[in-house]
Length: 385
Image (cartoon, rainbow, N blue to C red; front, side, top):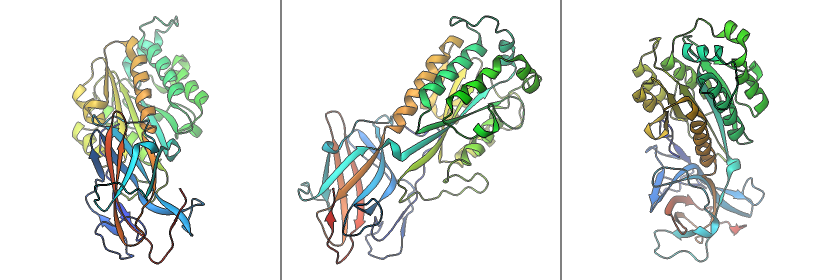
């Protein structure tokens, strides 16, 4: 799946026993300043999420047995996340050789455990929704009441999405400057507690809650809310610092934590606290986050596409279609997690710098992963794969 409004910039720092960018054997880490390590071939593109490094058979430091590994994400030619690849699909080539290295070993396998997605669900609780909540008198699956459809669709979204690898927090916005956690303070950060999340949503059915927290804040501060959600989600991931943003390297990470922001609105920004351009600029400075938007009713589609990207904006024509929109998004998010792979290999070469090319081919897809490593010198390297 393509990043929602921004492409993740990856700055890779390479150690002497890992990848180097210029072929030198210096022990000083060198930097690939391109910021983009996407390589493609055929119908698969692979984004390298962590650099190749030599690990021992115990999974830690190299001793006398070990192998190289890296974490990659696979997407098809339409930038959709791709699952289902396996080690039998991969062949290893070295130093631009046309023929694969029969004495080399390569393995690729799905590694969902290497990723954690922390989801911030941001819901528009401005006047139109609250008016519908006041009118929820008979709860029926056939009702077209916006409040009911949103609450029940979001509860199903929680059930479908939240698991060990995907956590969630639910916030709402209206005309206020700040966004507000819908559930208690201990679940304001992303959690796996589905009961707490759904109980928070059920508060919309409580007239006392609506009167105390929502009444009178009828306008929509959409632009400002997206900025505030970005700040909150940035606090969840190490690669994002909204106060003084600088992209940080994530080389050598054996797991990849990221945050996704899902925005639902049924209207336009009428509060005018923050301009559209200020929001877009702020989003553009935080390339480690992923954004999705769902729009219903009188929305500014151009704005929602600028937040989530056109391919990640889901338009909804009527209230009863909300459930389908959230279900589609849950499928998309789950597929994203299943598109991460651990690549492990032992080269046939035993000394010097080695250019690695891994061809991945199955019945439907073909792609290439490239890598460059510096092998340890004067060491008998015993492959443990």
